[in-house]
Image: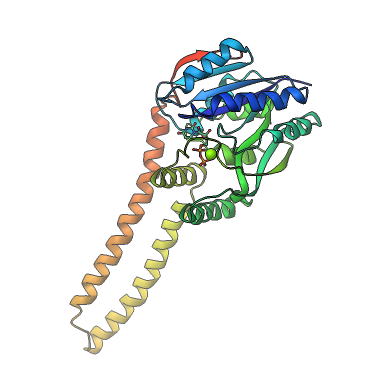
Length: 309
Ligand code: UDP
Ligand code: MG
């Protein structure tokens, strides 16, 4: 037995808060689990936090944090981990796409002694095909790098306090929660769930937002793109050796071509490769710059409820 803190990242979810709190509350209460809810309003500009405050006034198990602006779901999750008081902590979406009933299964597994319980999507919900293609590509790369099937992973997880402390000890600012729990290790298991339809409101992801998310997660997790730069360089080197020998031979045989077109093409190709490689390296330098600045991951503007630390 122990208390479960449920972290609910919420960004402009005014139509969901009340229903979500009620549904999760009813299910956990029905299962006899001691719990509290921690809504992290990620700089919502609608009534999200107002509703959380009202709920929290009525029920002391409901608490909330309001960010000073939108810092992203990743920051919201980590703020939740920072402030959670439970012996175990779960993260769930505010739109009930993660069925709250699964929380009970996760909690039971935690009672059995598991320290990380991953929510694995048995099938993805309805999505637009471009989105699906894009996530397939991104998770394909991540999966091969991490040697696990990232396509089915989600942010829906339950963690033991020990794991929460381990994640909070990480010094970096650019985190990727979904993969970090695998990286952290511990005694893990998984529960599969069907992704539900969003209850109310719209998905907060724009296409460009997703691309940025994918790039930032890849580079925060792996230096594989830098190895790609090296491999590209090596291939060009071999190519230039072959071409160089051929050119010299032709020159001495006196059959060298005029070669203006060749020169321009080579310049463009090599120039392109150099610029692209510089871009990749530059991106990593930018990440180092961000980390070195050491700015906080998020800024809290308001807190409500007793279940905060
Ligand atoms: N979310 C957040 N900050 C953001 C974007 C989203 O806290 O900048 C929350 C959002 O309120 C929801 C969860 O993250 O609870 C998942 O977001 P959404 O449903 O928009 O994404 P999808 O389910 O479409 O991947
Ligand atoms: Mg959703």
